[in-house]
Length: 114
Length: 212
Image 1 (spheres, chains in turn orange, purple):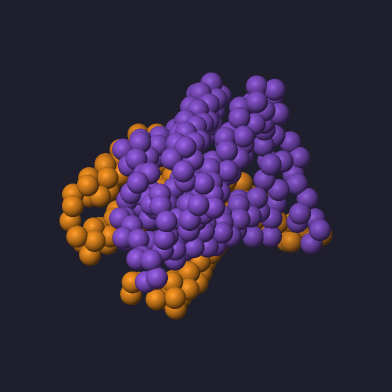
Image 2 (cartoon, helix red, strand yellow):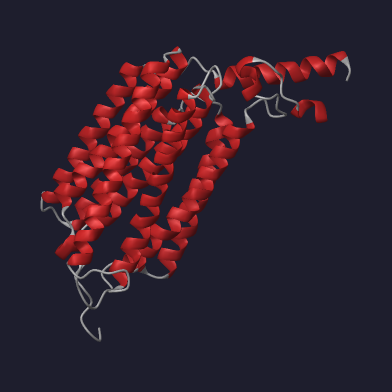
């Protein structure tokens, strides 16, 4: 292997190692803060489900709250906010593919018109 | 190019072989696996939504669901995600004692969640809701059962990590394997966030009238 190629490989390896030893992850305090926010959002979801408001308000509210919780876990606890963007691309591709596919199924079977 | 795939020896570097992408392939594979899991759970959730309110005979969801009980289970699983990241933070600080403690706490919370699910399933069964009773029971048990199996696999992985840490079979820097198990664990948590909303909190439409 040529010296230049060896250096390139070493640099790639160093990047891999550095990437897996990120120091940019949140601190334990921040993790706990996110946990508290998640607990509050869950409490809001449960309260909303008991509030007796109509489905046209309740369902979007519950979906927004669930979406925020989902995003908080994925971005902070799974570190997508801090890690290399390529991980996010992998996950978002699968997630958006699944959402698109199953939305098409539900729309074609007229589930939302019932 | 074969040289690229050769792991460098010594210390924790052996856990992160040089890669063509500059990223650990184990972690890329984990994210790819989780992306594929989105399709699996998406199919199960879609099937549940598709058959919501289509059961002709009871018991119906509002007959059997105990929202306060399931809410407590949801808090338990959510809290287990916090203990999981605290385990990772402890491992990254090089604190094996706290790492084991938080891993065990996560496994314990996971077991509490699964125990709660077993109790819930048993209660439903005693109330006459079996796997093939109606469309609701089939889609509900398959969806939540698959999720429960995923949580159980996560618990086994967590306990394996703890066992390996006691027998010195984890690398010198154990944060990488803990992070991989953590990704799986948090994924199980985000799936529950969706299931809890779609299955338990969104009210089910009234049952279809016979012949309607």
